[in-house]
Length: 328
Image (cartoon, rainbow, N blue to C red):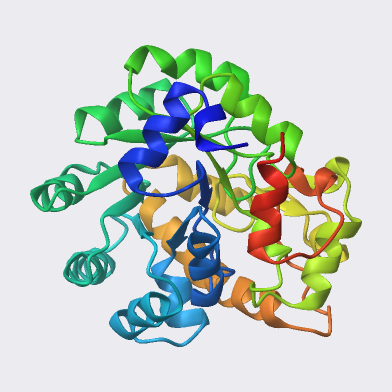
């Protein structure tokens, strides 16, 4: 598929971002190591870094991590900014990371879990773009009203925090907003990519497909679990963040169950207590997911993935993955 063969929305997306293909390497905790992000961009897509993965999991100083990616590729890269007001210290750190990213010439940002107004103000001041993660219309309107230039439309086949709607339903719900829409969830092969682009999406964001890549530092047993899994092996667990998250239904998940306990549900139901509970979940899951993703023994089988596992049967380089996606 050449640039001339892309539908108008996808052509506009690639032209605006200065990339070859309308493919985003989604930011993933804990799997977004800098080599993976850079490889997606070098292959013609847009790699988006995840700051906590970069610093906490893979051990890089934030600025030096960006410079490592710049050394690996001169193509555009992006940054994910989780902006939920969970703690002042966290927001201050995210604010500092955004400033550093802008100083290092990052011009594409994906915001999640909050109002992106303050991020958009800074990014727009230097000519950059902000796309906001959404799962339904009410969040999309909040994002657009607060400066988002486009939307990452997370459907019910996504890894991580999946939405309630399928890709077609979500597109039909959001197209009236008249901003670029990116399909996020369930894309693992060329037919799925082509269907999303032909339906009107400006681009596709892939996460699970890029975990099963040679450049990703996730453990071999994690990658093999993706190859071995079927769509029915992906389940939603509330025990990671308090909000349903797509994971592979491993022995660990079966032992611990999928539902939050009564105390957690009570905490999450209150406006004053939900942020505390989410912080507790976050601190616990950050450590567990980090250990599990890098553990080659397979004893910590706590692995996030989306339903695109059904279309993934090999571990390839990011360049090969993208070339296979864009086949006619």
